[in-house]
Image (cartoon, rainbow, N blue to C red; front, side):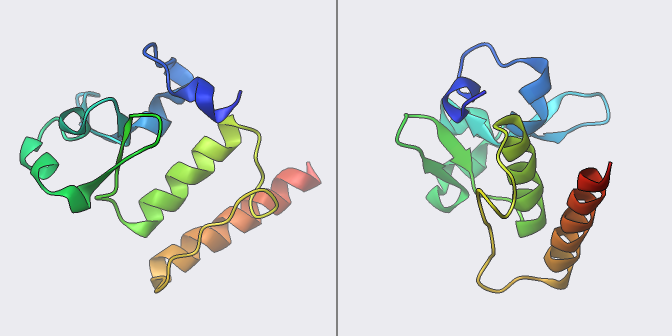
Length: 120
């Protein structure tokens, strides 16, 4: 599946975790990672759409939520890359300018999981 296939009106269940950012205990979406409008990114907190630092408009017209921490961002990119059959770090890379210890731990766990997958 190419990345363009992820940007469709009919989001498939297996791509839900890529698009749905924060899920409530009732399994409803609080925020989206990607949406067709900036207002739809922030379902429970629509005032976040008023501040442009919380989102970016993509070349295809969709909007991306940028109001997330680096660990969430890395995890989201890992899920998206898996759907597109991209391998980290061979096909893509993500390293913030000032990585936190929490981010470095998450990245290390991802690399350990990759080695385990290769052994199986």
